[in-house]
Image (cartoon, rainbow, N blue to C red; front, side, top):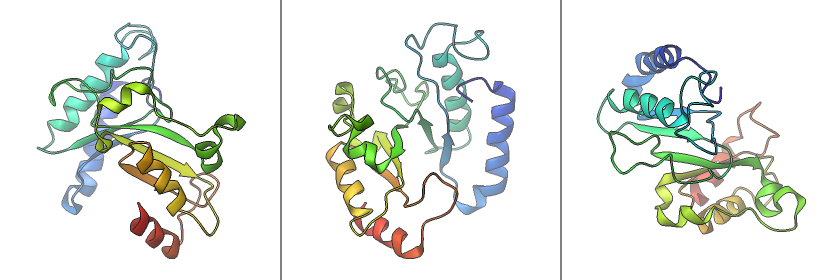
Length: 185
């Protein structure tokens, strides 16, 4: 909800996920629709203007990290964040372990916004290892998929990739497609 969900509600949802999936090896929480304000420390973007994105995501990250050692926090910006603010210098105060920096159809990965140029990571992203970045590419169908999308991801310093042949996330890829993804990503 672009940091508009009250913290108590989000913490309750985190508790539910751990109650349901801890025994199955849950290793972290993925937050969709992460806000990327121009000034993350300004109290103007989150919780209807009463909190900063920095404070909001730091509170959620701390909550997840307090669940157990080694828990990961993924923030899905869907685009390159404007700066490296999601990654603080210490594990106990950082806002994210992983940032989703691309979420669009595969065609935008190779021809961003119809510009004729491929999508590219922000320059600041080169200062971090690939394990800090993820991408989600949908509508990636054809004989060369998902290997082509995974090759692009690896070349762009992206350590985690989910590629699906469907337009959006309405259905799960076939076993054959997923086997190709596991083999090539």
